[in-house]
Length: 181
Image (cartoon, rainbow, N blue to C red):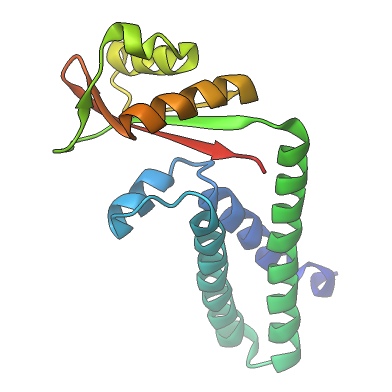
């Protein structure tokens, strides 16, 4: 019975790596502050695989200390970890692509370069207005929402005209969009 479950920790840490890489647990802000870079798109994938590798090395070390070196088991574990995270990414991208959704992320940040915008300008995009209102009314520093493709186009036009960094009521905000496809 123990033989069947030896690979489970490797599968679970691959799932955890996937979840952290796509900011399910809010780790994105920590990772972006550490790297001083936005980790949208391909960086999310790379961060997930990097975390999977770190977890794999940690679990391998624990296994070697407990059971001794077994190259067959370790190579199978690496393949299982990589396949697990790859299957999760394929499922995520397949499901996301069929939904044609856009993900809006609005963060309250400290910045030097920004463009002041008016209430009327922000209200051109109802979802963006909703996000800004949320940040103004709470102590939260980040707002995430899944928005329609139509609303995503409106926010994209807004960003093309004004840039990613805006200021409203003395609050500096970074706005970003992530697309499913």
